Image (cartoon, one colour):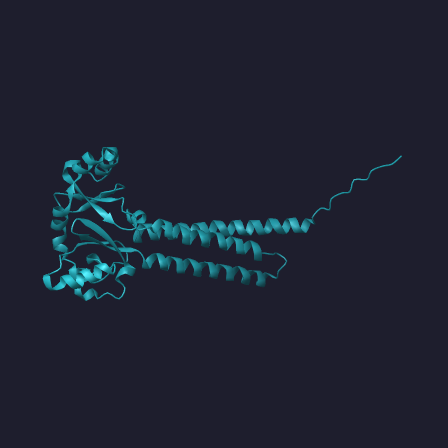
Length: 267
């Protein structure tokens, strides 16, 4: 009587299973540590360099997530590849230290990139606010600006107003504008800080008019006004010129200060 013999599939050695578990555990620990460092970096970026609404309108959130996600994922993957308990302890420690140094160097480079494109100036240009980044002012002669604006802030944003070009300045201003250098990027046209509240108050349009024009956005605008602690009738608005333009700044018509923001197209 014939008997069929079923072959037994070879089982992986116990040592290889234990090695895989050790690698997964090491990569998991590395991932948790990387996520903690990324959370600290997020506090720095969004707390100091890209406060609301600049994380949205200047693209800070997308840039930070791109930099951090690559860094957070690659580090644990490399750890998974190099971790092996069979290595001498000193060699394993050296390999992990190299991974950590490479990851921190990548994070540092990414944060530097985020830093140099951070918003530093919100410049009123006639009837709109332009976001000016630090990189936009590289090589610019800040000594032509009013004294209070001759240093770019390391965090936060200078809110300032610009003046119209004088007759003898118009040709140069137009040529620079055509090349992408607008008034807000030219310190010679920045007005003193004392002029900013009055300029904002004069340029702001009534928020009630925007509500009438866009009734579908009425709830959003009223909520933004409530968050600013002002009644709608006491607020004006100015559209933002930035990477994303569907935002407005809310201006207190009494003090001439920017007191809030809303994700609404003001143009």
